[in-house]
Length: 171
Ligand SMILES: N[C@@H](CCC(=O)N[C@@H](CS)C(=O)NCC(=O)O)C(=O)O
Image (cartoon, rainbow, N blue to C red; front, side, top):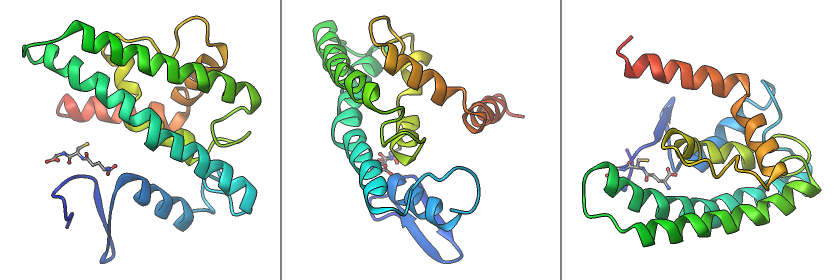
């Protein structure tokens, strides 16, 4: 189903889609009448969301994956380079300094409403705190902290993490 043999992939009544962000865009449009408006129709509002989404995929995700790549070695007991890890964390912190400015201008990454631009951060960023890295809420970035705390308190996210914990526990 997935040409690169990866997950996620969905089969929506025979319509097969891969790439998580394309899947999210499809589902947000398909179910636009349910829940919050994640992907606005207005050209300028949608472009703001696309701008925030592009920041996530072009800047945030590469930086966080660099950190996880080195941190994962430590977790698995493989040769680990603290300097590489520290440099990756510094890179992510510098990126969040820019987020701090953006989030000082509007409430969410893609404008003043919660949108796909914010939601895309759920694929990786929650694993930071799970691994004891508090960079999303560390002191000195009040806008980032406000934004991240608000995102992770959303009922859908709280429910998903609770369901996942039950799934991992085998219930
Ligand atoms: N850009 C892709 C990344 C997909 C991806 O990296 N999937 C990983 C799991 S998160 C995977 O399937 N890894 C197994 C593999 O590549 O064999 C997306 O966002 O859907």
